[in-house]
Image (cartoon, rainbow, N blue to C red; front, side, top):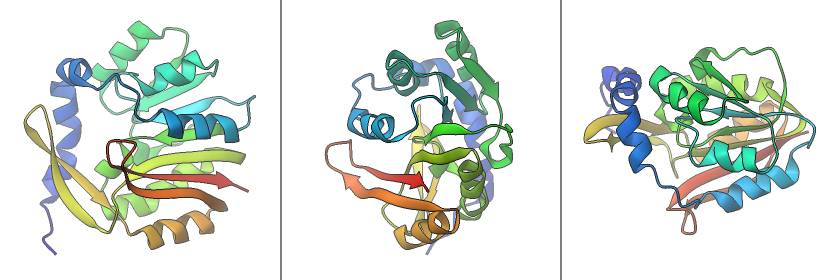
Length: 204
């Protein structure tokens, strides 16, 4: 297996910073993620806020959750993305931060890491998944996208290369079980969701 250069993973932040406005303009507003967000909303405790990790500019995922009547806290490492969030949704909290060091000191009914968690290296995913778990309340839900199998690939944002990686489905299952989660669904390359590989897990 070819190992990608580590500076590619570290350069992802700068790429999103440079292209925040263009990325937002080109971000699909058709909510192919809707069925997964609806499953999260149906399962998670209704009285707790939701955490959107790697929220980007808040479109369309955070908007959908907000429009559903939920309080959303968004975290992103690209400040230029957060500026767009704050302009659009001034009544919500938008926090500049890196999910690898996430420590908010509060619990959420649902944690979403859609198209963000997979920018971490595999070792970073192994240490970050427990962090996301610690922010998920009992009975809460964790929803994230990953790859269909263990590996690393190169994607693009506005023509620049960005890093992606994934653990194996079996390793995700083991990590989640260790953190007290039950996997509700794991769909590889969901044909109804732009071929995203999606994991939905509920904390006991």
